[in-house]
Image (tube, rainbow, N blue to C red; front, side, top):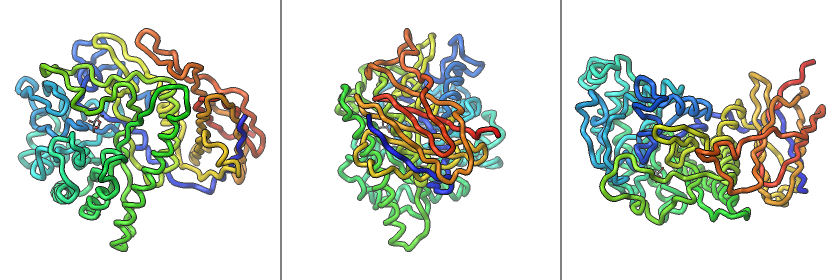
Length: 501
Ligand code: AHR
């Protein structure tokens, strides 16, 4: 049994939690849009063809912001193809994924879907095949109230009010060889800056994310971030990070090393962004948008081109990863890491939402169900609110590399939330939280444990509830202390509420 001792204090806070930390991603890829969120004719489809079962699961997931329409797709996308009368919209070759794009779902449908899902949209502009003219026109179409050609075009499409899309990405993974219209850092930095200038001139209220590296192992990582931000420091609010965890699925604890890498990656991007600020003696802080992250283990290929299927199929089954209990532990651990960097990570998007690397799966004409990774995400989004507290772990910290924890406190409800991953495959853990300085007594509001004796267990259409949270028992709460006893390979979340006098 591992034991550890953590001190927390209500007044020692790290940061507010931006609710956008619990974002997701919808790309025109595989079956994320078509037969994922949108399937006219499905028994659960509403009058617009949106699957109501998926809408309900999206709300339950607690996703707050959703990035759209890509991903690699956006780098060859002409947004004009996806607006206006559906019968007049062109079919196009999508070169990113080797598919046929029917364009029966586009910008306005996505906005309608977001409103129904109670989600904020985050849009990306195409800086692959297109440039600043397209970017400014797209912002005008979406966000200008009216009285101009493009805003009136939107109104003629039935959208009288502007969409007021606040968050915009300046392209996608532009550093990557697989990207349509990939660029080197100086070219991209200049293009991002010029696109940002016209987008901000069109709507000064928007917030912009410049592309960081496609992942930390890119050869140009860190130099890319520096050069790009050095060019568009004034215009950018965010720099993006992307990560798809990879590991050999087995019963070892190796997969947890992904968490240390994630932690280092965030710290490194913060350091680079702040170095750019320092050269300007600027107090401005560029925030981090971790706008693609997830596990990608079993459907991974050496090159993305190996995923392409012959014959330009429409919405084929593409990277429909079946997540396991082990993946759910990793995703739960990553949420802890993201929360512990909430002072700089203000947006994060689990990629993607449905079917393609999705926490939600669907069958065309059939049911929708929750993958294992759905559960830690939904619980964290619902319970981890308010501020992240700074936690101090006792001397045993170095001896407990398998323990990952985080504490949040919501002053408006006085709810304290504790999240702990015990990544050890064979050792139980006892964690004592010393609640110094809270000045109030707590009782357990709710407590959940995600654990399955078989780390490779998964949820399927036939058995959708194989891996689901169970009540966490054995919690001891005294005046100043909470003691949790945690199973090996378990992710746990405990919400403590004030004891009524
Ligand atoms: O999410 C799948 C793909 O992964 C995205 O299109 C791309 O941005 C990343 O490489």
